[in-house]
Length: 254
Image (cartoon, rainbow, N blue to C red; front, side, top):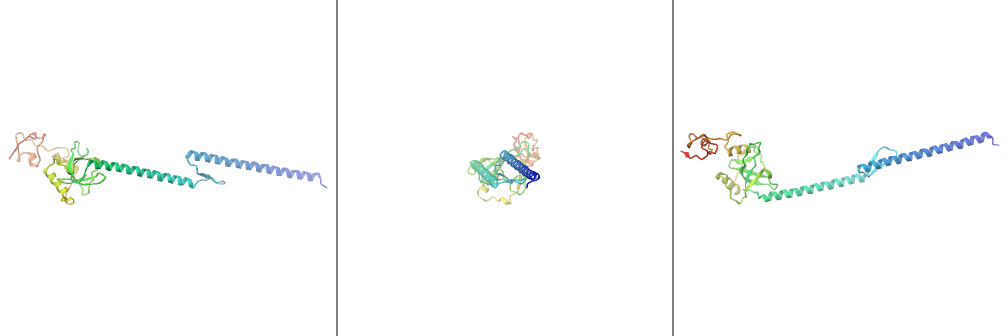
């Protein structure tokens, strides 16, 4: 025979089970809500940073980048590199076309541009092209030897934008007899490049302007006529100019 106490125990057990079921349902609902929240935040981050291949592993706090994202980055990088190479080749072709239009070749006469740091009022340096590269660089020689930047034995390739073509290899040019001899030797293949002395821009420029120092040009003080025994220019094997006392119009007296 069932007593009231037994009914009371059964009712308490049922109530307890109901409470546990409700708590479990509430917990599952909260867990599902938290997961939805995390996935929502993750999606917002991926959209913001332009990455759509994020995956979220439940039970961890780590975000894993999918393999599709790495493949897309690799493809983008390869396309960018290919585009850069294409633009570089196009620029090189345009540069080569500009160099070819100058017509520079072995035996051409060029004027080298002198930097203002070499001389405050620089003159162009005449030279003969000994060798020309496809990129426009040239090796230049003159009657004093091989022209280099600092006078060292190392070859100096003059860049395309640092010289001007005065006369092509098949054209005549108004140059000195000594420079013409150098030009003939170069064009005939008889110029001994390795055995020639080296001369720097600064030294060659001093010779051109007949300077005794990098900033002062040599001159004489002759008034009536220049004599080899008294003229300062003739003693140094230089020619008189407008800065001399004779105004460069002197008649040499022997």
